[in-house]
Image (cartoon, rainbow, N blue to C red):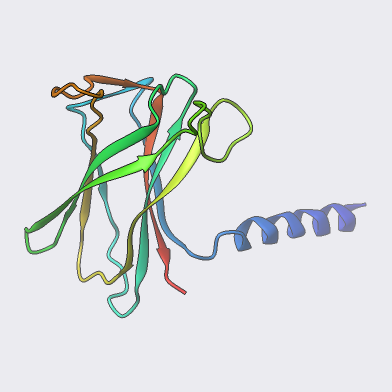
Length: 159
C-alpha cells in the first residue's frame, strides 16, 4: 500500500512540475474588487539570462462585474538605465453579447494577454501597469473599474 501511494504521489509531483516549463516569472497582485484609475500595479522582475529571449504577458483575473467589451492599459517597462518605455494597449475582454472571455470554470475568468515578444533582458527591470478605461464619448477615465480583481505579469522562455 505504501509503495502504491508513493508512486501516485510521485506521478502527481511530476505532472505538476512539468506542466509549465516555459514559465520564468509569474506573479499576481490583488486590486481588491475594483481597480482605481490612480492605482499602479508594479512588478520587480528578476535578473534574467541576457543570452535568451522571452515573451511577456499581462495576466488579468476578472469577474462578471466587468461591464466593458475592451480594456485599455498603460504599461511602462522601466529599464536598468533609468529609461522607461510606455505602451498604451487595448484588449478585448468580452464577446459582443457581453460574455467574459478568458479561462476558468466559475464567474472568474483569467486572461493571458500578449504584451511583448522576443525580448532580451540586461539587468533588473520593473513593470508598472495601470488601467486607462474610458466610457464612449467621455474624456475622464473610469475612476473605479469594477470586475478586475487581480493583475499579473508573466515571462516565458521563447522557444
